Length: 534
Image (cartoon, rainbow, N blue to C red; front, side):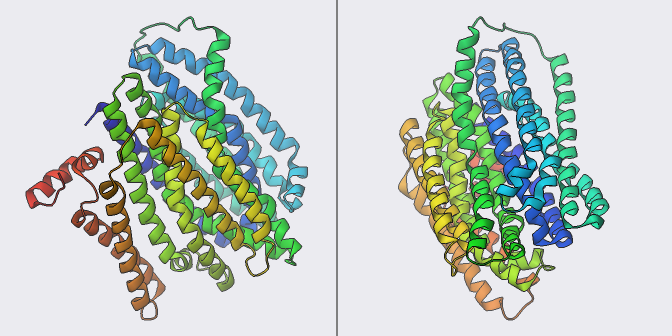
C-alpha cells in the first residue's frame, strides 16, 4: 500500500472518529434541547444557524482547502518555511472576511429574520454572529495542519467545539429559557459562540507549540504577490462555492418552507413546528453518517495532491477506487438503516414530542435517507476533484442541483397533500444530480477503471441483503415488542447482516482491507479462516 493511501485512510479515520463522537454527543444534546424548547424553539434556533452556516462557507470554506493543498505541495520538497509563509498570508484574509461576515449578520439581524418569515428569531442572529470570526481564524490553522496530513489538531478542536457547545448551551438554556421560547433558543446559540472561541484558542496554542519545534528548511519563495493570490483564490473560490451545497440547501429550506406553508393556510406556529421537525429531528439524523464521508473528503485533498505531485498514477487510482467504494458501501448501509427504521429511531430519541411531529419526521427521514447515499458520494468526490485540480467542477453540479432544489421546493411545498415533504424530495434530487456528475468526472480525470463486479455489484448486493433482513425483522417484531427493542434489534441485526454479507460476497478486496484502519489484522485473520478475497 502506498504512503499516500495510508495517510489518506489514517487521516480520515482520525477525523471520522472525532466527528462521530462529536455527532453522537451533539445528537443527544439536540434531543435534550428539543425536549426543552420544543420543535418550535428549535426553528428559532435553526433560522440563524442556516444563515450562519452559509456565511461561514462564504468566508472560510475555500481558503483552508487551498492552504491544505498548497502546504502539502511545499512539504513534498521539505519546505517548512514556505508552508508557514502560506499560512501567514492566508490567515490575514480569513481575519478580514470573518470580521466582515460577523458585522453583516449582526447589523442586519432584524431584516434577515423578517425575510425568513419569523422576526422573533432576530436575537439569535446577533448572538451567533461572533462565531463566524472565531471559526475563520480557527479554520486557517486547520488547513495548515491538514496540509501536513496531521489531522489530530483538527479532530481535537472539533471535539472541543462539541463538548463546549453542550456544556455552555446546557447552562445558558437553563438560565435564559425562563424569559421565554425565543431566549431559550438564544441561550443555546450563546453556547455555540463560546465553544468556537474555546476551540480557536486551543488550536492557536497548539500551533505555537508546533512552530517552536519545527525545523526551518527551505525558503518562502519569490513568487509574485499577484500570482500567489491568483493561485490561492483559483483554488479557494470554486471550493467555497462547492462547499456551500449543504448550507445553500438549508438556506433554501429556511427561506421557503415557512413562507410556502403560510401560503397554503398554515399558521405561523404550525409552519414553525414543521420547519423545526425538519431541522432539529430529520437533518440531525441525516448529518450523522455524513461526518464519515466528510472526513474522507478532507483527507483526500492532500493525499491525491501528493500522488499527483509525485507523479504516482498507480497510487492515485488506488486511492480513488477505494475512496469511491468506501463511500458507496458506507452511504448505502446508512441509507438502508435510516430509511427502514426512520420512525422507530425518531420515536426512540424524541419520545417527548407529539405523535404528529414524530409521524411527520418519520416520513421526511424515510425520504431523506435516499439522499444519504448521494451525499456520501458528493462529499467524497468533491474532495477528489479538489485534489485533482478541478475544484470548479463540483460547483457546476451543485448549481444544477440547487436550481432543481429551489424549483421543487417552491412547487411541491405549495401542494397541500405534499407540504413540507416537498423539501425532502427536493433535497434528494439536488444531491442525486451532484453525485452523478461528480462521480463521472472523477473517473474520467483519474482514468480509474472501476470493475463492475468488485466496485458496484457486490457493494449493492450487500446493501440489498441487509435491507431485506431489516425489513423482515421490522415486519415481524413491529407489533410484538417495544419500540426500543425493535430499534436496537433492527440496528444490531442490520450491522451484523451487512458485515456477514460483505465477507461472504467479498465486497472488499485485499487492497481495500489494507487501506482500512486495522484492516491488515482483519485480513490476516480472514486468510487463516480462508475468507479473504485476493
